[in-house]
Image 1 (cartoon, rainbow, N blue to C red):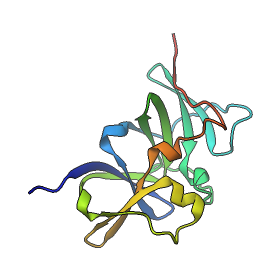
Image 2: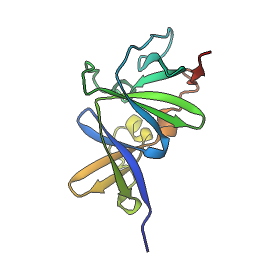
Image 3: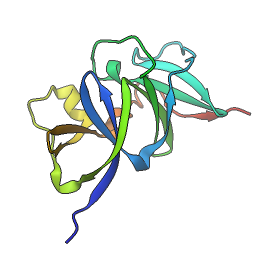
Image 4: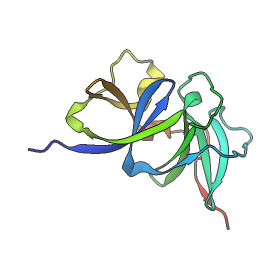
Length: 154
């Protein structure tokens, strides 16, 4: 019997490897000019105009309460779509696409910080790598903070 496999985009954040399901990733972009938006959370960097769609951008370092880091030539914006929202995540670098057998995924250990714990769907153990799988619903669950919707520019 074949175990279920999920394709994920692997990216680096604060020297850890994270994964987002490929089915939720629309594109990976180089860092570009971000227009600031007033009265939003610090981790919301603003919006970009991506091929005619105004897309909110979240710095995942700030979202997870990590130290802010200068953007460089490896910095990427991963454009994700989830339940009709399109949002960009700023990450330190996007590495590769891998298949994760779902039987290698364990639930997040209770020892991680409570806030981070909410964002973690599970931990994949692959040979010598540990991959933190993000729970996009919780990362994007900010309805009380700002409405994250992409808007098409006419």
